[in-house]
Length: 468
Image 1 (tube, one colour):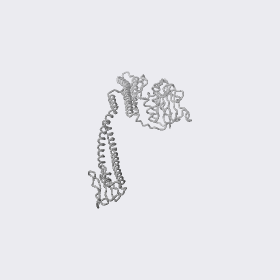
Image 2: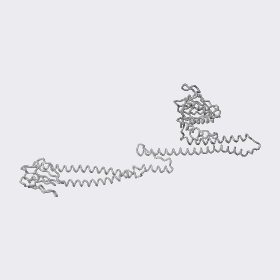
Image 3: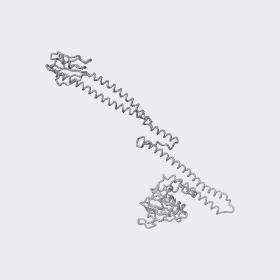
Image 4: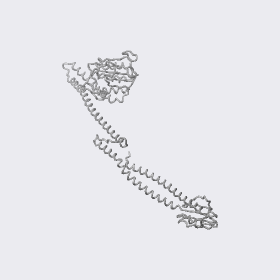
C-alpha cells in the first residue's frame, strides 16, 4: 500500500486543476480580447474612411487629410495626375502608396479593411478619380495584449501560490480528525480497549469512517472476548479430559497390579475375573473418550453416505445397539399417510444409517443418564416434509437458556455427573452428524403443540432428516 501524504496529494491535485483552469481562462480571454481590439481598430478605420467620403467636396484635399489623420493613423489622398496629399505615417510604418505607374488599383466606396502584417489598410474612391488611403498600425494592440498576458501570468502565479498556502492550512485542519483516529488507534493498541471515537454525526464522510472504526473495534473486542472464553473452556476441557482419562487409567493400573500381585496361592477366580472385567471396562471408556475427541475434530470433514432407508428400523436398531440403555424404552411409530402403526418403512428418509444410529444411541444414553428410572419415549413420525424422531425422557428437563448451549462442545449442564463417562461432546457430535446429512437436531419445549401427545415432561430432543 502506497502511503503518499494525503495532504500533499490533495494540494498537488487542487493546484494542478486550478492551474489548468487559469490557463484555459487566460487563453480564452486573450483570444477574445485580441479579437475585440482588432475588430475595434478595423471599425475605427472604416468609420474614418466613410467620414472622408462624406467630407469630399466640402473641404480641400489638405483639410480633408488633416481631419482624417488621427494618432497612430495615416491618411493619403492620391489625385488622378499622381499628386499625393498625405500626413506623416506612424513610426516604423511602411511608406504610403507612391504615385506613378506602380500605384495600387483604386477601391470602390465599399472596399473592405485588409491586414498587411501589423498594418490595417482601406481605400475609398472619391470624386475626380481620387483615391483615399487610410492606414493604421496594430502594434499598440499587440503591445496591450502582451502587457495583459504578463499581468495575467503574474496574477495566476500569485493566485496559485496563495491557493497552495491556503489549501495546505485548511487541509491540515480538515484532516485533523484523521490524526484523532490515529491517536485513538494507538491508544487502543497500547491497551485502552474501551476508548472510542464516538462521532457526533454519522452522515458525513469522516463520521461514517469513525462509526465504522468503532464498529470494527467493538467486533475485535467481541472476538477477543470469545477467544478468551474459548481458551478458558478449552483449558477446562483439557482438565476434564485429563481427569476422565486418569480415572480409567488409574483403574486399569490398579486392576493390573492386583493381577500381578496374585501369586496363585489359594486361587480366587472371582477376584481375578473382576479385575479383568474392570480393565476391559475402563479401557473401553478411555477408548470411547478418544473416539469422541477424534469425531469432534473431524465433524467438518464428514462425507455422509446417504441412502434411502426406513426410519423406524433405524430407531429399533439403535435401541438394540444401546444394550442396557435401551431397556424400558418405548418406541412409537404412529400411522402416517395410510401406513399401519408400527409398519417398517412407514417413514422413509435419505440419510447415512451409521450416522443416524450413532445419533440415536447418543440421545438414548443422555436420556438414560437424565432419567435412570425412566420413562424414555422415542416417537417416529413425519412433520412438514421431514422424517422426525422425538426422544423424550422423564428427567428434570433442560432450562430454556440452556437448550441451545447444550449443543456446544465441552458443555456439561450437571457437573455432578462429570464422572459418569460423558465429556460434554455427545450432543455436539450428534448435531454435527445430523447436519452433515442435511438434517438437524434441536432441543425443544416439551409443551410445543407440534410434538406428539403423551410425552414425558423432561428433556425433548428432535432429530429431523430429509424425507425420501
